Length: 442
Image (cartoon, rainbow, N blue to C red; front, side):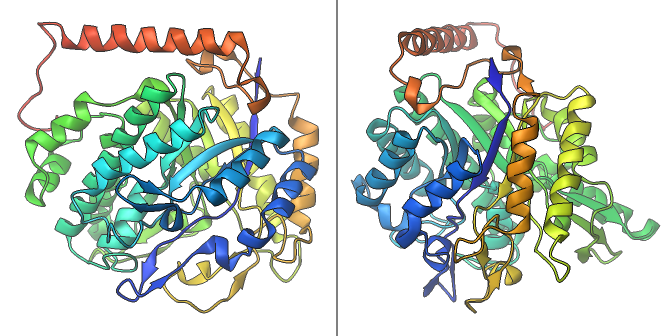
């Protein structure tokens, strides 16, 4: 029996700003480098067994096939000793200085080599988010001009997006060469754009298609004709598009949906937007994403600031949990929930655009590692619900094993079976008579 995955995360965002001169390293800002052992103790103290976590990419990946594993060796050994299951996040909004940014065409192949190297060094790791929030990363870096390349064109956005998603797909392939039963939990922002009035319907409809592009490409889902033209008009080639159709690994994936109060947008007739607040909510929007992809679901991020009353975040936790139960009662295969992150964050009030050092009270603990009311509420929620929500094994094509069971003979048999299924699937795909792709995206 696989039980519901209650999780948190340790923020490892690391984009650059100010034309690459300043790196917004959240692990540094939140003092994780100094307090990582304490942080892992706090995870255990809450009764949490799953942790969204990854090594800092910019100090670990030093160059082509060059790595510094010292910090990762220490932290991953400690996670394994504690029997905490890491959901390894290899790229969270930034790349090393030597890569430059997401416009670099060498990034996908190089990142896949990094992912393979990590999997070889830590073969007991089974769960991965190779690249976090691919849509948001491309949007903020190449369309809004906030991070990394700080560009603001559709061509820059499509270039960043196609290279980020290609890197994610190649990384999944590389990891599966090492760990055939790996499972990929693709944390992605779940968005919706509401038209302010009839004149705003057209731009809102367009944005509501763009929001799906990262997952469409990642999961090999054919885009509509308008999105196909948009991609072709702004730098994607037919060959690149067909790579995504042919190389998807959906059967190894859980669709991670992130939801915050800023995920819904009000669209004005001129195409500008503002935050709409919570209008539909997590359950409605997740149903839209599930209808498109049909994959097991995990709520991979949410939070809210602890406000002046002191209970605002705890009330939001209860509200999001009610949405999770609604999704489950609707019949969707939802397998986990995450409050992100373990501790308060720094400078997310400006979306990491400004290096102000301002603490954002979003965590289960503050930066002095004192528990917040939402931390106590989450601990209680986990204790109440952990044994009530088993996730039936039919939901996932492959079982999940904690670190303490990674050497069990049953796991070796599962992995061997996964390799055989993958081989048969590839042979079937290569047979003559395979349906051909159409000229447009429909």
